[in-house]
Image 1: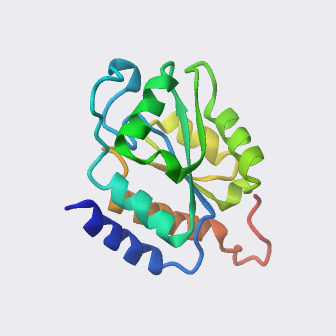
Image 2 (image 1 turned 120 degrees about the horizontal axis):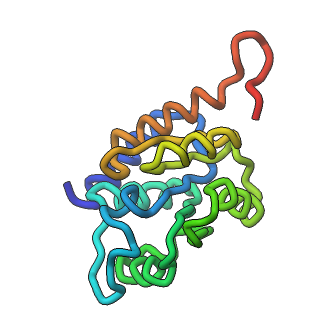
Length: 175
């Protein structure tokens, strides 16, 4: 399935939901692309998971902001790969720094930079510990097995809506 077809399907999925996130945040390694950045050379031509670029384009078309939250000791390689993949301009924030930091720190910086509250964010990552810690901040967080794809995207949007709807007890969910 090509990028245009994935974009079209992602736009159809977005059209199913009345409530959408204001910001979608992606991890890099094994979420947007199928490798660890630090195991690659900046001279290589990287590749994204098959559905990733189409999903990014659909989010852009829909006016939903996109950001990166990634731990990597080689942020320079990641930034080179963004340029090679021609996706560099798509992101309003790129928090890529040392593997000694926590994802919560990335999200604090993203919130500070964008002004978007945690409960208006959707996050995709391949590591359960990141999903747990970021979920604790009020961000809808989705664990991906083999990179972001249309199924994970739809699941994320579904969970985002469920987290956004006030509970039936008349009290809103905590944010």
